[in-house]
Amino acid sequence: MEVSISFSDIWNFVKRNWWKLLIVVVLLAGVGAGMSLKVLSPTYASDSTVVISCTIPENADKDYRLQYTSILASRVNSGLALANATQIKQEVADELNVPVAEILDIKATLNQNAPSIKVTTSTSNASICAKVSDTACEILAKQLKQMFPTPELTVTMVDPGKKAVAVSSKMAAVKGGILGGGFALVVCFVFAVLKVLLDKHLRNSVFAAEALQIPLLGTAGSGKGKPHAEEYRRIRSAALLQAGEGRSLLFAPVSRNSKEGELLTGLARSLAGSKKNVLLLDADMVNPQWAAKIGVQPKASLLAVLNGSASLQDAATPTDTEGLHFLGCAAAPEADSAADLLASQSFADLLAKAEETYDYILVSTPAEESNSAADSVASVCDAVIMVARYGVTPMEQFRTSLSRIRASGGKVIGFVTTDAG
Image (cartoon, rainbow, N blue to C red; front, side, top):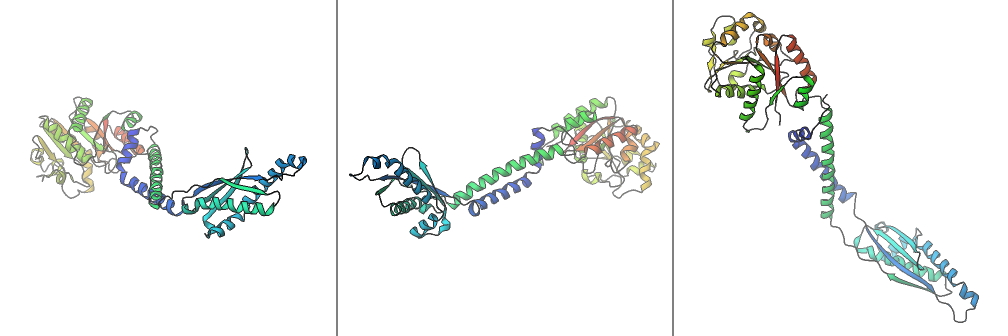
């Protein structure tokens, strides 16, 4: 498992899975919009304040006047208890002729600096929000006057409730959608980080080069219609430098679907474009497809050359690129025993003969994990280049294939990552 991670790795994962992540964002945005309409319905708050005072009789004695403060305090505390009573919600609803369910809460608090009570209400109906707090204060005033007829109480509303502006369902849905989409983006980012961090496949070519201690010769991109000529030139320069005097290069894909075909074709054309004679040799006798891919019809197969029924000169077929020839297998799979010829002296003699005519011989084999062809020819080729695909080739399989190639006598000069961005 790779233990390094960079933003480019995360970005590559996002680019490759953008449509899946987009579905997640859209779904969670829809959930957020739906919740804002059905579950998270808006609430509206309003508060009204009343001041309570007592009238002192003109003929009241001195002791009565001294008790005025405590009398007033008891009236205010009683008013607070009445305002916080559970039945006041029903009384307000009956007075306004509205469903009691629309009145979510009524609470009262004391003002420490004056004999006043602040009534705060919350409702689900914006149109009655201010009326609920005002009506609660009016009911409180009536109840206090009935409860304490003497001395006469005066209950004055000094701060009536303010009308609330209703939140439109469309705006609520938009806000909910934005919140849901934002949450989805966070979830997708965390998922991408964890996916890349815990992934056991090749995602960081530089890390793989350090971990396996082999040079990274280059990367080939995956953009459709995007020219890769510069990438192939860089890979060509790095491969030839690492190969030194070597002229036969084996390209060994680690696993199936490594996209080595596009890489090898592009590299062969790049070499031929530098005024070199190049032979592209397909050693896949199980599932030969190269001839169809590059649009040629070989006169004779690789098997015919190896068993001596055809010469290299007759079997090598020119392609549409000047200086590039192709030698491959028949359209149909060969017999199982035919693959054994790759490990025979005949194949080594074929490479030696090809070097008399061509500057470079590029050999292609099936995936090393499922076919022994790469191991069979690795020792007779001057250099071996491993091919791994970004996000597809398992790192453990890469290590195993590299060990087998080296154990077979192959000189591994580096690797190329395909489909990398």
